[in-house]
Length: 435
Image 1 (cartoon, one colour):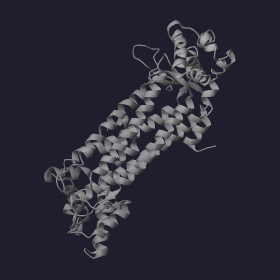
Image 2: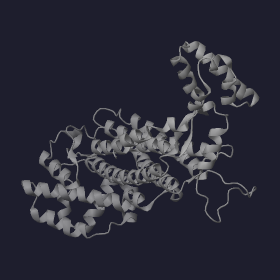
Image 3: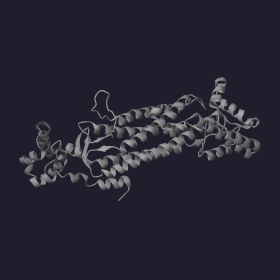
């Protein structure tokens, strides 16, 4: 997590100030529940809220204590006792460190998910606007990087919209899966704390009680969360890679916005490089790389070990901050993307009509030719275009085997671009649900 690829709202979720404030709220809400049950005096809970709630926790002081205790939660509780005074002895009654650490981590992941979902919404809005803008902008579809058949540029963007709509649903599901709370004490048995405390803390923090924890919240939840972030990152890369290909000089059907004063190369003043989408490709690799350690965290020893702890201290902030930045960058790229319909038409025309080969093939079969014979007829004329630069329509009309089955008018009719876009409205209704 470095400032270059960070946004302040997401970064704030992972700051020490936020973490210690959440720790305090967990402890204070638990104390309220203990007071209600009658385990601790209600006056103690009130004092802790009044003094701790108004306090600004001294991070340097907590670090100083931890250098001695070698235990972060104890260091925080010691500092809290310095603030609260005698009633601090009732704090953390029957709890273990994981109750605080795991519940806090899940609160942070939920907050991060909320920002990521909002990021996807912003991207979806940009994709939808540009998709409708270019709904009928005809371009070439490619398979294996080679010209296939015509589509529209709006259809490309609609496909991306549908993909990120699925990403949004996955983030919502991942948020729900990780939104659990554990206040169950050592080895998760509730031996020294009433389950009602957990229920109270969960409600106050917008979580649900973990049905059964060991001494930690099960890490399969977190594995799914980070795997979901990896899938979203992969979708970012797919769209970024498409834009990078479309910006190549030989293609130039779309291009990242190039701002006044921007420079593309320190050596070549003419350059306009796809730097943003290249950057997104790299960031996606980082986010995906954090999914595997999260999966390896699932297998902990018995009721608890801390082999997952160092991993999560890094991937929690890094994965969410990086993905937040990437989603916002991609939304900006789509919002300001330069689109060149004239170049799309030039590229469509580049192969002399070969993009209509399937229609001719099908027409020949409908006139009685076997599929194998029809394929050979069309292919032998298509190869003249590839190898000699001939015109496909001209070659077909000059082939007596073709004209024996199809008239010139019938052949020409198969070269209608509109044929390939007749179901664009149907696709858009499926994607956007609009008439």
